[in-house]
Amino acid sequence: MAWGKWILGGLGFAYGGPIGALIGLFIGSLLDSGVKMIGSSDDTYTSSRRTSSDTYSRNSDSYRRTTTVGDIRVSMLVLIACVMKADGRLLKSELSYVKAFLAKNYGEQGAKEALQLLKDLLKKDIDPTSVSAQIARYVNYSTRLEMVHMLLGLANADGDFAPEEEAVIRRIASAMGISSADYQSLAALYQKTKDPDWAYKALEIEPSATDEEVKKAYRRMALKYHPDKVANAGEDMVREATEKLKKINEAYEEIKRQRGMN
Image (tube, rainbow, N blue to C red):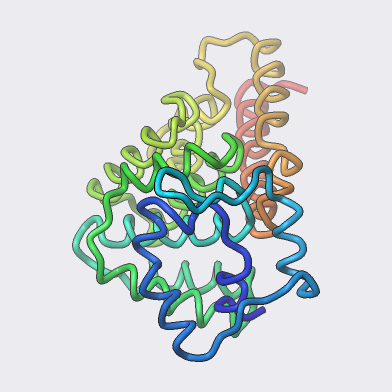
């Protein structure tokens, strides 16, 4: 898919607010290069329209309050730029991680255009708090969890969290309304070699929990992180949710192994 056409035809809330300001010049460059607004005959655009929840308003006090797959993807790129810039270095491992993520989800041409937008964003000063607050206003909680999960994967692309990157992700998670327990659960999935209690933290329980409490915690987390929760956020988010659920299963199996549970 061509990201340029998809962006122009498939954005809702991201046309306004701090995210809209960040991508405005990029959209202008797409228009200048001859990219056309696309209509409902485009399958991707039609799909994104189905996820809309409100009507479009273009007055001085509000902007389109729809939430589309395009909003999620553009917002994700803005957040990725925040994390990549956090420690003042653009690591090859991080760029490779992002390229692989984009190629897997958007195809060769789509990934190329998404990377162009990312390069543009990396040149800008971005306030993670204001961007995350805009996302929190329009994106459901389950999708926000997946966005944080993806950012943690990016920060851990080189096998370790830089303190500056973790601080930015915490700031993003807080501004998006992610609970401290949920953030710790997501972060624990990347601490297997450093934290002996990572599996318990992933299930949001203490090592002193009973076997029955462990089972209940696993069922609760499996329901919370089920891919169906983000079905309207795009196939990329569904894939992220599926991967995260596998990690939750791994945490449960690790606890069972340690305890000799059936």
